[in-house]
Length: 304
Image (cartoon, rainbow, N blue to C red; front, side):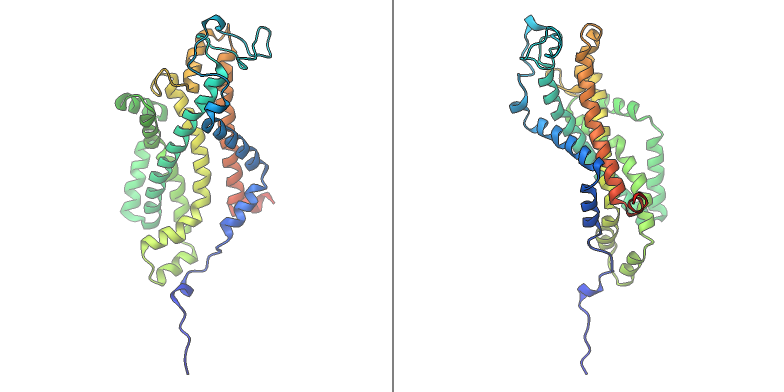
């Protein structure tokens, strides 16, 4: 009598393969995800197609039209829809080009913080023991330092530039990913499908990458979207104090710093870039909150 031997593929631990896909389909139906995603896409379009969208060159100075109000106000001009700054530069064009710096810093810094923090979280949460204690002590030590002070200190040491801003944000904010993801990894590591994978002789790397990482992916995605908004705010703070981009590169924080001297005479110069930053961060926060509710099965069942 011949006995059928299951193939190696049949030995995979049973875990719903379409859970993440179903959660993503639910996410598309969430109003917060739709509104936040629309804002993020609109800002991304402005950043990518800035030369085509901007009505003027952001560096061009029109000294005959300094501190011009927006076109809907009295004395405004259609040539400068959002008015001009103290050097006669188009505020709308500067805002559109400033979206490039904000999104590049936000996305790249969030990716770096996610990779560093998630890697350490997977190691600490899965292996435990002295590895977990060492990483946890490092996180506690790092988080004891004020984030803004640490960022400014790092920028003073590194010097100005977008690359250094990204590096400073990564070195400050990786702890957020590490602490949150580590706790979730510890919970997932005790699940039955992880125990089954260990009994079947799967290696630690395979268990971490194929069993644990997909289970914590919704949480990582949510943290990533929130971190992009945090990176945008941090970049604005650093550019406000002159530690980010050069003076000839448009940035929202830099616009606010330059307009604060004329805020009573021309308040639109400081209000409009603040609104651009507020709407962008709001979009990422709505997207992150919507993804958190729809991708987490426990929160999704609670909201039904």
